[in-house]
Image (cartoon, helix red, strand yellow):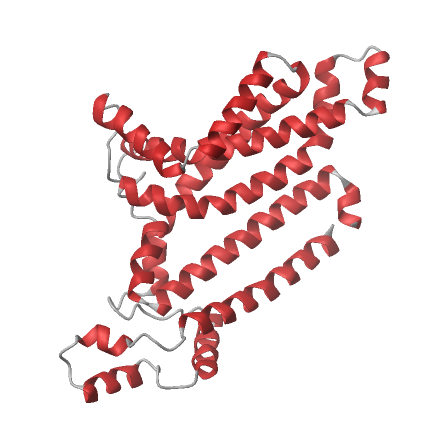
Length: 313
């Protein structure tokens, strides 16, 4: 298991360096005059050139990347070009908002998807047909449309939840829960649709195996067969999809945070990308990639624990 984890970590480190390099090169392509954006269109060219020199933008791209990389390895990701705020502080203030959404969505998706998927895979009746319809709707309906409907019904008409805004959990747990409930539901619908389908398919495939028929013929209770044998072997594909869903939530969080006015890294990414604030954008890229590496590593470890053959592969 140690070698298994070490290989995954080594691959993650290589991926981190490759993505950081490609991201920096793409963000630094000619066409954006940061000094002009900072000082205004009426600023003298001498002042603009001096500002670009101060930021190091007059150096070759490879030199700029190397300077950024050396500082980043020392824990210094720089400051925002437009607000002078520390990159780590800016991201740290917004990261808990997005993490609370993603963790909430993942927990709900895991519980609901496994419960409904196992039931649909074993019973193959009304629940199975209902799951098929829900999966189709979950894939077909645009996420922003589902979010707007939730806001219109539960926030505007029923007034059960606030339409916009965010209350941190350290100020009020009830207030925090009220501000993240609708965003979590909006993100969970599509995630549950995909994961539950994978769980259902995996359960059906495992239930058709000869060893399951043998266990049932020997008179073992269905509950024991499901927990000890079916669920263990059917979990690996579902966990892989769940990990992919977690990563995909970052894209959905951009829309949801914009609609609900949440100060997360999704809305932050949109704001600073339009400005061309490379230090902030690179910080967000690194946080995202590290999150993806960690999630994939955890999924691989769990799958390797459930199925020792995966460690060999």
